[in-house]
Structure formats: structure tokens, C-alpha cells
Image (cartoon, rainbow, N blue to C red):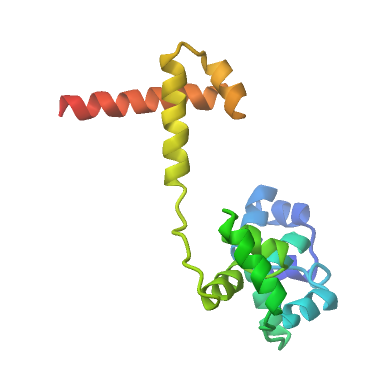
Length: 184
């Protein structure tokens, strides 16, 4: 199925042929990191050779990053590792120091996350742990505080920019966990 996709067969025709949904065909192609040759152009391969990260190029082309790496390998193209100039490194360090995540730093400088992490580490920057738990813990505390003040789920959702159903479901889940912990 994947070979047919790469060769240019339409997903709808393949879905009919194999008796599956189009989403199933798409999932198989994505899982196999398959891409059609027209999706990954010579310009993309040149950028990959110049050191632009596979994740940046993948976002540009609308394919998985593994497809960029796979297509480059099959084409005999090696990933570049151009070093950013000292000015760029200083800007990257400053941006990261202001709280930007590594992925954001990489995107701004058109390099992959791994490369951005390596550049920052080589510059002597202490890399923060990649954890979302502190921000989620802060959001949880805020939601519970606002509920305690009598705010409705809708008001909290609008205030935080998340659906009110998410607020409701989380509050219920947290209450269930608390009850479970107390009864054990």
C-alpha cells in the first residue's frame, strides 16, 4: 500500500481497492514515513544538506520528519551541520534565556530541535528539563482557586482560553482522584 502511495496512487482509489477508510491509508503512509517525490523537492534536499532541520522542512512540506530523513537517505543526501555564526548563537542563548522553548528557538533559526539543543549546550547553557507539569500544575491550581471563588466552568474556560467542557471534566477528574486517595 505504501509503495503505491509513493508511486502516486490516489488515496481514495487505494481505500476502495483494499476495503479500508481513506484515513487508514493515510495512517499507514504516515507511519511508514512515506512521501511522494513531488512533496520533497530538490530545494528541500538542498536545505537539508545546508543544515536546516528535518522537523522544520517536514512542517514546510506537510510530511513527517522521518520522511524527510528517509527520502534524503534514499537520495544519497547527508544532513548538513553548518554552525550558526556567533551572533546567531548569542541570539539563541538570549531567546532561550527569556523562557522560549528549544523547539521555538530552532524554528526561529531554521534548525531542528536536536541541533538547537546541541548549539545551546555547546554555548554552555544549562538545558531546562522538557516538562509541562509545572505549567499544568499552575493551571490546575488556578482553576481550583477560581472554582473556589464561585466562577462557573464557562467563565474559567473563557478566562484561560480553553473549552468549558475541559474545565468541567478536569475538575471532576481531580475530585474523583482526591476522593479515591482519601478512601484507600
